[in-house]
Image (cartoon, rainbow, N blue to C red; front, side, top):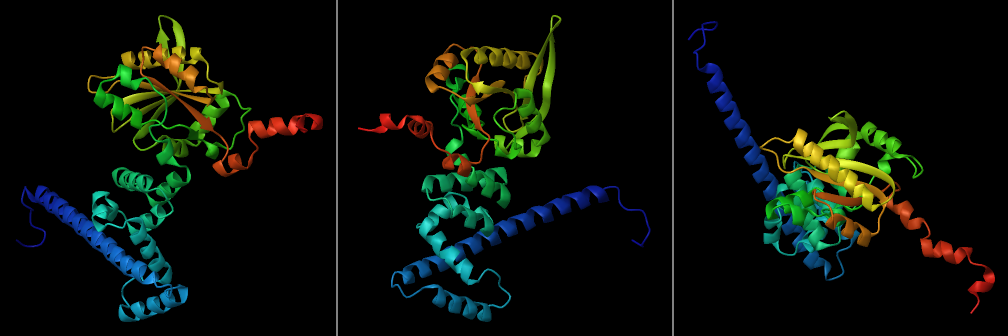
Length: 342
């Protein structure tokens, strides 16, 4: 065929097929190469961990080893003394090589794995590794989620899902909850009203979605519904694209009250009736409150006929919260000096 002649009718389709095959193969090769590198790093770390038991393998020796390795393999990256220390920590965190594949750790880039080393608890490390793979988390998202203790808060909100949803739907819906939600990125104080808090969440929607978790898509704020001439407005409406369900979020800047459940249940029923399609899972609701009594929440959830959960939210970074005095400490400080005497 000469240049400029008419291409065969099936040319574009053939090109797309071949392009997809090349792309898929390159992806598999990259995954395989990454897995091999991760296992190599584990093997090196295991050797260094064993040698360190002699007490003679400190920073000076690792610096010399790094220099010698880079001289031997000048085109290979990742052989710095700092990385050798990470490899040793890696081998200590995962003593069994088989667990690296079982927990999908070898599907993560090395930079992600170094972030996981900051998690002391083995079960939590495994959760972060699995979630990072499933959610295609970037390194920054993984670092943020570790910092915000997402593993501890994941699926922790008290709900009535187990009573109102089937066993499969219950487990899936529970996974989209956290308790508490960390909203320190909003840069607002606790005296702001619900509309101001809601507005700040929408203004920082990317951060809000990251805190809600993987799979959430923003639908709207103050979503309007007309019910026989009566106007109702849902604070925040989201759609979970993986579970194919609407999630109604209501905000309360005060302490939890039982009547909050009734309002949220009404909105969940309304969204379920007006927006849910046959292919969608049941709509669920999530109430975010500044504080709650778990016993009151439990009794209130038991009386609701709609699948809802209740979580608290925090507006201050965790390190600041830890630095603040507790309620009991404040009470002791305010007591008259004579009351403190035995």
